[in-house]
Length: 164
Length: 75
Image (cartoon, rainbow over all chains, first blue to last red; front, side):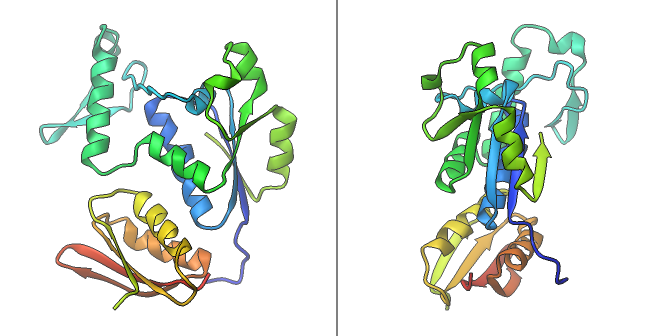
């Protein structure tokens, strides 16, 4: 090991709220907290939905060219013309959730619970709340409200800053 | 013999690390935790976890396809 000092804090801007994109911020955030870092997560735009009390996350193959699902020993990608057929995104979501369960991958609900337990600071973007007409009581307890300046203050004091 | 044994077989990243951290939190300094895992990524991850947190990785081995780690809670 080098004598470099380890980072002590991390911030993550969470901008996406689909089932697939919910994973990177919660996995990295909870693991960083487990490794002793102070973590701040700023939930903005579609990422704000990840703070809703009831999560019903979806994934769509539409416009998601790199999305391939393992199928019968191979991999199946889906052309947009198929992905846009009603019900296909629902089927893809079911397929993804089955894979998640089968492979022992944590659910987003569990990771979020771990984030709360590990005292990750969770900031809900006030502007996004207004923009998409969410109510504060739609969101889980334990979040705080803030805007760009609140995030920048946290980021300016963090060793690692991620945008996801 | 470890003071506590944690079975994370079948669980994927980052669950073995998160569960190990939770277990270590409730253990006194100097106590040892054995973790059993089937996630191949956990080999590199427990090394990194221990290097970063200062907990001591006493042992890392494979037994019948199961990765076994022994960590001494020092941090």
